[in-house]
Length: 315
Ligand code: RIB
Image (cartoon, rainbow, N blue to C red; front, side, top):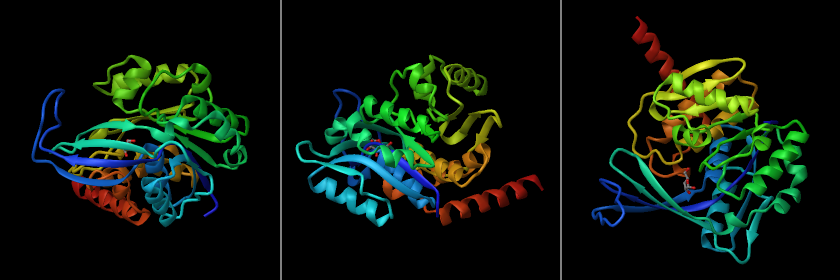
């Protein structure tokens, strides 16, 4: 296992309530079921990549508390290199409160804690780690200055960068020009481009706007429909595997982690998206963020059964 994925991002402890429906402002909904799980978009992507089969180094900031200890233990169990995780002696670990409804849809509120303290200096101190990456994978749950510094270092060293722009916010053209692949979902694509995505033509339009800003390739994740890809090697929808969703939390994170693994192993973009779609589909069949990230054997099994289904459907 020589390929090395470096993930820069957040770590959270997720407090989950499964309910019939997600409460609206001012509303109380009873009858929920509580559980907790390891989460955070950065951590979820690091765990997803490690389980999907690559060596992973994670750069993150966690509190010096019980939640930080639990997250760290989980990363070690998954074989992730944790020597660049910073323990913040002042701020608490990040915490997310997640409501999941009966259709598996969610609503998330995050108290960022130590994640919000990740700085440009933190990244400059880890410059060698970023330079040594095959792929740098990032999200937007830590301050933009840290993302921009990591992107600059990676770009200067010709390290490919995958940016999952979640949660979405305005991004400068200067940053976008350094990104090899951007992976928004429909909501994030709308915030970044102004295009409401109802069909493939809309996805193409949104992708074109991002490509015009200098991103090299665009993948818009479309939930159960799959992912729309616009790159120099492939343009079109890559359909997802059909599953019954229990909890869609972290499906995007698992997609990104698995995508990075497939690309680091030299797969073409379309094949990498097929692999990532299978991983994401598996993740929605289980509750919780990191507990739902599949292992590579499960992903291959899913891909095999999909191929068999397609052959049967075509007969
Ligand atoms: O993408 C899902 C993640 O978003 C959760 O694990 C939660 O921690 C929030 O960061």
